[in-house]
Length: 108
Image 1 (spheres, rainbow, N blue to C red):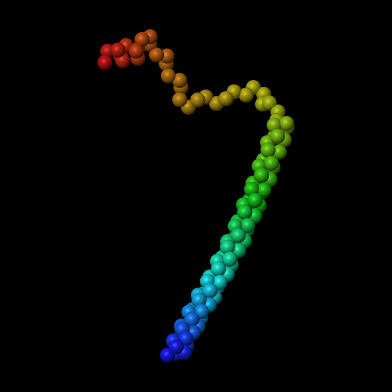
Image 2: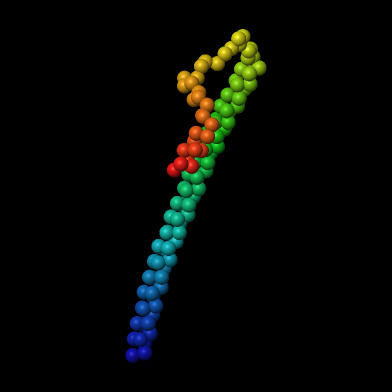
C-alpha cells in the first residue's frame, strides 16, 4: 500500500512538474514576444524621430533661405519717388459732436 501511494505521489509530482514546465515555456514565449514588440516599437519611434528631425531641418533651411532673400531685397531696395499710399476705401467718420455719446448714455 505504501509503495502504491509513493507511486501515485511520484506520478502526481511528475504531472505537476510537467504542467509547471509547460507554463514556464509559455511564459518565456510571451516574454520573448513582448521584447520583440518593444524592440519594434523602439525602432518605429526612432524612425519617426528621424523623419521629424529631417522635416525640421528642411523647414529651418527654407526659413533661412527666405530670411536671406528678404535681407537681399531690403538691401537692394530703392525708395519710390513721390510715393503716395492709395486712398482708404472708407473715408474716416466725421468727428463726434461734443457730449453726444455721453449725453445719450446719461439719458438712459
